[in-house]
Image 1 (cartoon, rainbow, N blue to C red):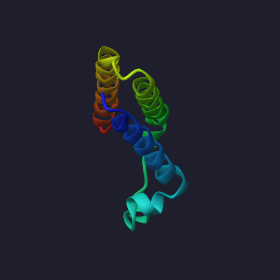
Image 2: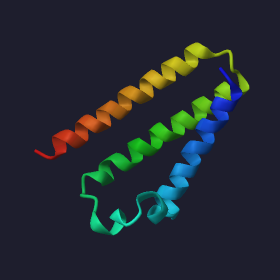
Image 3: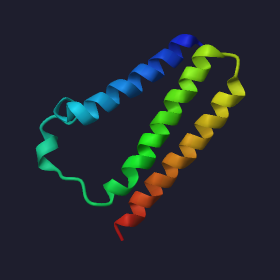
Image 4: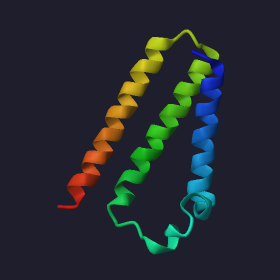
Length: 95
């Protein structure tokens, strides 16, 4: 696995988190004032941050040990399944 891909993943997640929490107007633009998140979003904030933390940890491991391709695939599968679980939770919350 190319190390540049791991670095890009780490930088991308960190920049997105910085924009989302510190400068949301840069990320969402004028739509930021037009919409308000419902209460259901407070229940998915922590799981979402955990998925992002695991993704950063996976990128750091792959940066140090690029030959661990099975580890990368396993973590990506786990985070994708967790993300799908969050999406399903959000879709059912509207009922």
